[in-house]
Length: 211
Image (cartoon, rainbow, N blue to C red; front, side, top):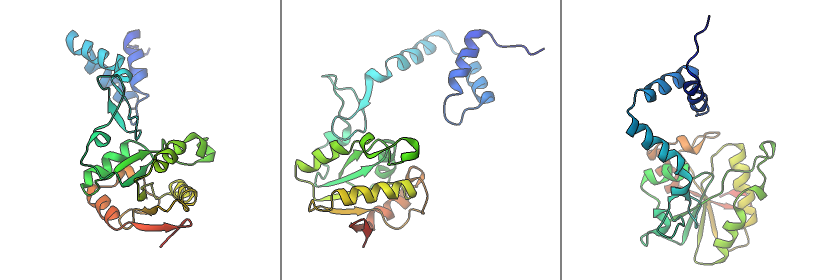
């Protein structure tokens, strides 16, 4: 006869199993570890989870993850910094990829988070991305180079081609990271040295083709 855990522990394990890379056994160990914590630590975790969306949101300028400001709005440190080069805008798929690029230490421009990439089979169309906000930022002037730092897989390449054709008559210098990123790889897993090489050797895109 299988002996089940008390219901609250089972519910906690079910929640933990929804995390990436966490299976039944791992969720079980994590739940039992949490059960061994004292009440103040559990209360702190519960409060952190309860207020997560209140304290963390999307940057009002670029879409990066950001802390809540005094006025309740969200502005990330990169957009708030006067030291960043606002003539160069780097487009990424997800906010997590910004950290990969920043770890290389070679890019000093600003970012725009698309919220994904064009993938019709997964229900991701251009209309579901933050392309209108990107258009608005480019139309405001001041930006001279648009870097399409999208993953070099089929969907990432298709999105880069779509954007390069969309803005080909804007007068912008449109580029994308070059050497160092293996074809078909997710940019999220690139190491800092590889990312630095790719950004330093970026190539220009004209009519959807690289020069």
